[in-house]
Image 1 (spheres, rainbow, N blue to C red):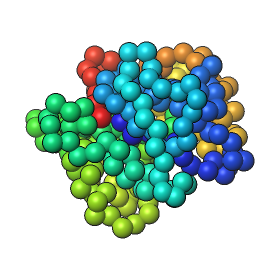
Image 2: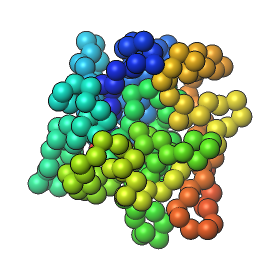
Image 3: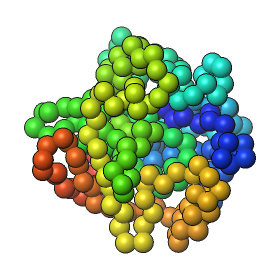
Image 4: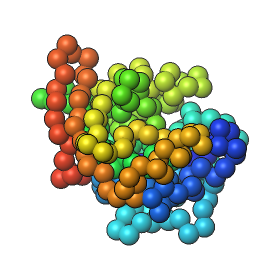
Length: 240
């Protein structure tokens, strides 16, 4: 998985956003835990190195890298993460995993089951694989830093893209849109912490530090009929 953690956090007064805490753990640790529990084989964090941050118990090794120049934006950061993973020739190399999660570092309520739902949607049904899958919020807006992507397709798209927006890079991959309806009283997995108000909302959620239920998933695959399923925590996902 690649976690983008190098933004300027201008709307938070330049605070160290990934290091802020919700429910007793940092935002970055929450995202790392989701990927680890979903089965990620390795983790590349594009952002400043953090003393004490590293491999979670039973999780993959964690590497910190920086885009050039630091703060250049999400597209250069994603490319830097892909470069760090390399282009494996050995199918046994962890970097050869066919799927890759690309995540923001400020998603305190993202859980492994949500990543597993993304993987299931990206892999498709009846062998109809897609380029990836992305979470959408309650208004149907794609959350480009909460997605799971076919690694080869993502590398190809990144290598040929000259723009600066994640939408421009990722939308042509025609990802499945995955909307997760939280369970009663549960926070939404796409809730990020861009502003002081967002942070207060996250910290004020009852049981903010507890595990979230997977909720109900609606898959929009471009067909008139949506497929409905319930996420489970049984399969291993987010391999990259």
